[in-house]
Image (cartoon, rainbow, N blue to C red; front, side):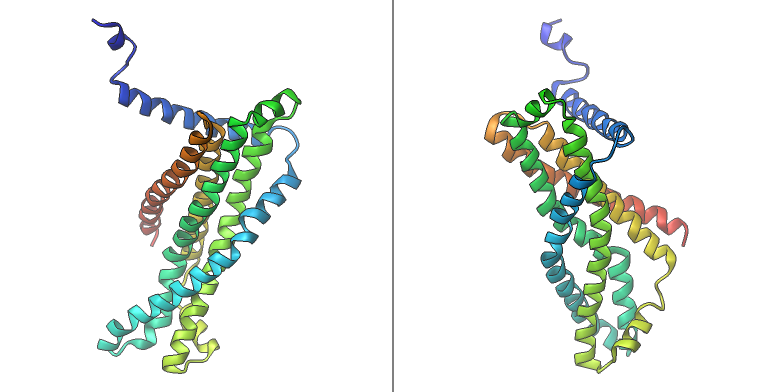
Amino acid sequence: MSSSSKDTLISKNIDEKLLVFYEGWTFMAKFFRELFRGRPEFQEIIKQCYQIGYKSLPLISLTGFITGMVFTKQSRPSLMEFGATSWLPSLVSIAIVRALAPLITSLISAGRVGSSIGAELGSMRVTEQIDAMEVSAVNPFKFLVVTRVIATTISIPILSFYCAFVGLMGSFLDVTLNEETNIIAFFKSAFEQITFLDINSALIKAIAYGFTIGMVGCYKGYNARNGTQGVGRAANSAVVLSMFLIFIEEVAIVQVTNWFR
């Protein structure tokens, strides 16, 4: 048996995948240990919430408004065939609150926030700023990772509900231009079919997505290597992996939610 085969458990590629999976779980376990150890970095959390949440508002506003308007326009012809345009507000609200708002918000945030966190922490790693923090008796993991994951977990749910509101306003604009519906009648019809289960599932989705975006971005950036190329790979892989995990979580949460309907 060759020496190379002795160094592998299954195969080289599979062993590397398992090692990455193990490192990801240990990184997450370290996050929960540091989360409940010592005093939280409230100032840094607030700063990150501002960077992640407030600065994302223009993009979320535009995307949510256009999504609501376009979805309404696309749904109207199908409902008109059955003379059911009065169901349009309910249809749009169910689609936006249950699925579109959390998913769109998380995907936009994965591209904007995930890449930013990966690039920022990656550049700090390759320029040895994280090592300097350790020498200075500062806990870099708690200051850099825990604060950003908490900020994304808080900010993404808020942005999701804001996106849902803006999307409904875009839908209302299209409805009122075509059917001349007033805003009270629109929102009354929109929320007739929305239940607490829909709101709770949307909240759970947004929390899970926010945690995933923060955790993946921090993991990729914190473990970046090989100079500037490593920073670029960290930012890119943070976006790709975040989106991949978000879609998996979407399927899992929808399946579990449907068991309670």
